Amino acid sequence: MAGRYGVSARSATRHSSRRRSRVRRRSRVHGVRVTVLSCSLAVTAGLFALAGTATGPDVPASSGVLPPLSERDGDDASRGDARVASAKAARPAMVKVVVQPPADPDVKPVATAPLPSGSGSGHRVVFDITQQQVWLVDADDTVVRTYYVSGSRYDQLPTGTFEVFSKSRDAVSWHGTETMEYMVRFFRGQNSNIGFHDLPVATATGTEVQTLSQLGTPLSDGCIRQDLEDAVALWEHTEVGTPVVVVRT
Image (cartoon, rainbow, N blue to C red):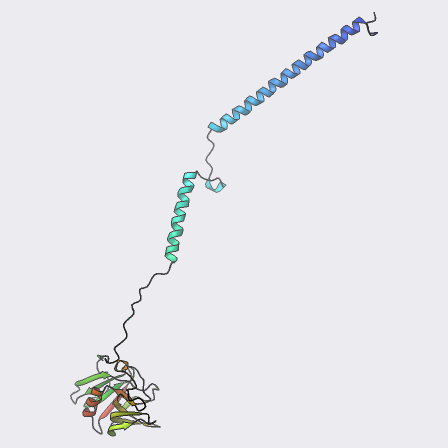
C-alpha cells in the first residue's frame, strides 16, 4: 500500500525502525565516548596527584638538576666568602714608610769601624777608601783617633804604603778656585799631588764646599778632606817620612 508520498507503509516502518536503530547506535557510541573521556580524565587526574605526592629517585649533582634553594644559598655564600678572601690575599700589603729627618749639616757622622787587619804596624796613618775612614795609629799600634773623610770621587788613588813628603799650613787647589789648610801630601799624582787637608773654602763665596754631615762620602777632585779638628790632629801626628797606608776593605 502506498503511503502519503508514494512509499508503502512497510517501507515507512522499516525506515522508521532504521532511524530508531541509528539513534540507538549513536547513543551507544556517544555513551562509549563519554565513558572513555571520563576514564581519560580520571587517569590524568590520578597521574597529577601521584606526581605531587610521590618521591622520585635521588638525582646526582652532575645531572644538571639544581639543589634546593637553601643549599644553593649556602654554597653561593661560601663561594662569595672565598672570593672576598682571595681578593684580600691578592691585595698588596701596606708598608709603613718611616721618613728620617734630614741630617744636621753641621754635625759630622761618628766613625766606629775597627782598624783594618793587614794595614801595617807602628806609627802611621791608615786610610780605607771603601769606608772613607782614617785611623791615626801610635807606635804601639794603638788607635789614637779615627774619623770619616771625603776622598776622591774619581778614585785615582791606588792602594799601598806611601810616605809623607811635604806639609803646608796653607794651600790652594790646583785649579785655583779653593783654599785649604793643614795640607799633608803623600802621593804624587800625574796632574797634582794628593794629600790630607781640611774642608776647602770656595774663593768666590767664602764658604766651605761641603758640609760636615757629608763626610764619609767621596766628593773631592783627588785629595782627602777632613773636619778642621781632625785635620789639625793629623797634621800634628805626622812629619815628613810618616807612613800612610791606603787600603780597601
